[in-house]
Image (cartoon, rainbow, N blue to C red; front, side, top):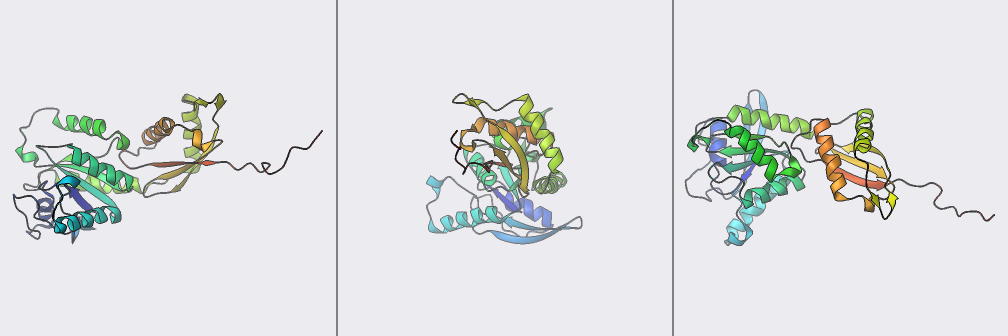
Length: 270
C-alpha cells in the first residue's frame, strides 16, 4: 500500500499513528520525506506493507536533483502498489495536483482510497461527509464512488474507517464476475441504450468476457472496434460499476473484432 499526496499532507504522521510510534520523521515544513520508506504493519491480525512517499509537487516546482529522484521513487511506489491511499489536506482538497496524482493512480490501474487529513482542524457542521462524497464524484467521474474518508493522522480520528475502506477497495479490485451474469447485464445494458449507428451502419456488440482482475478487465467482441465511441464505453463502464457494485475501482473495457471465419473466402461467381 502506497501513501501518496502533495507535500505536508500528513502522510508520515498517519503512518506513525498506525504504527503506534514515531518511526518516521515528521515536520511542519513540507518535503521532510525524501525517499519511499517501507514499513510493516500488523493491523487487527492482518499484515500490511506501507510505503510512505515524498510529496508530489507540480513538475514546474521540482528543481533539486534530489527531489526529482524522490518523486521518481514515489511514482515507482504507485506502480508497484496494490492499494494507493491518496491523502489530501482538508484545508486545500481537490486541488489540481491532487487530481493529477489521482488520475495517475487510475491510469496505473491501482485500487484507490481518498483520505482527507487534518479533519481535526475543520469546524464541523451537518452534511460535511456527504459533501465530500459529492465533491469526489464531481472531480473524479472516471472512478465514481471511490472511497473517501475524513481522518486526523495526528489524533487518530477516522483511522479504523480508513483501514476498512482500504480492505474493501482491495476486495473490489480483485473481483471476478461470473460469465453468465456478465452477459445478462451486457444484453440488458445494450437493450436499454443500443450503440449508435456510425456512417449509417449499426454497430453490433456480440458478447463480453472478463480477462483478469486487479483491476477488473473485460473484452467486448464486436463488429467494428474502431467505430465504437468513447462515450458509449463510458456508458458501459458506469452501468457495470452500478450493476456489480464496483465503486471507485478502475475498470478496463477493451474492444476486439469478432473473427469472420469466411472472410478469406471469395464470393463464388454465379
